[in-house]
Image (cartoon, rainbow, N blue to C red; front, top):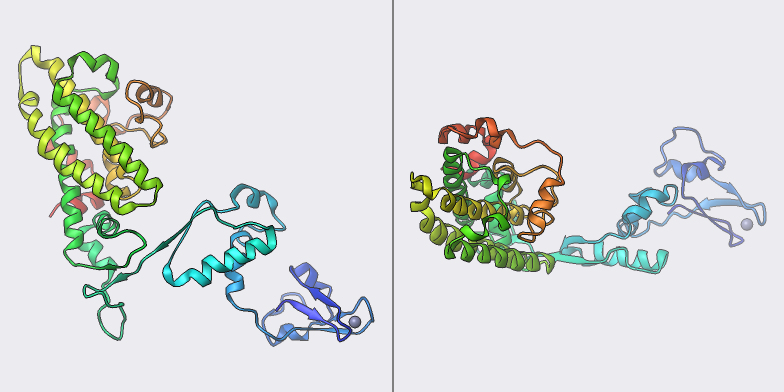
Length: 376
Ligand SMILES: [Zn+2]
């Protein structure tokens, strides 16, 4: 303990090296572990006696308890502390109730008279397929890197978050990430379909707004936009409620059913039309598809950041756009959010190379990681 005591009862708590330097027996650059630290003594300010360090060791979780502000340099640096403390959200597994949650809570209340965090999430463990704890001696450890090599990091993330509520343990099934991949692959195919035809027709997503398209939208377009709004609303509520299993299930149903099975099938004929008069109708389907794809990328981003960013940038999204700022409210926020951002368009969707780009050309621009992630 960093506490020095005198037989007369006087105590001295040392918090910094500067305070330690005042001690007898301290030498610059010395090892401040035991046993060397015990050679440092102080003169008692009350009786003039010699103060010695308390030999006992504090519960090591005390360090964890104060980590939230010690890490920010408090008390010597108050700026970082005022900016970051208390934590909005902390997350640990259920073996850490005493170690992290309780130590921090107790230390926070003792030191600052409040909890050092606003919100706690206690997550479950990933167990082997039979529900047994993974251990090297049992030989049932599943290496996440191997799974990532096989199906990609995003597929693994999607599976784990989808399988159970975050606070429940998950018995890891080897086919699980493959199912996650199926969902992402379907999304990827929709993006591929949309960007292929948008490129051929030189569709410019920045040239259209909900208001300018309103009269051209067919019933199925309005239906798709409505489904998209519902997906965003539900997914946001689940994310904010930390029900990540529900968030991923909402996304899964939206991608597989609404977007791929229904909408893309319904608009295929429209995108193939060569008729000049069909341009407006085609643009209405592109507008709807683009909106659905971008909304999905933004909603998917916390779960599958790699594919979400790749699609977002590829489809003309701008770095720095706030996730729910630009696309949250159709006809109101949609264009304000975009026009307020000063970044250049992503080269993958710039005006110059949009037309005549082949399917292979587009794929070549995808990051290798995402390409490997999505393809067999
Ligand atoms: Zn004393």
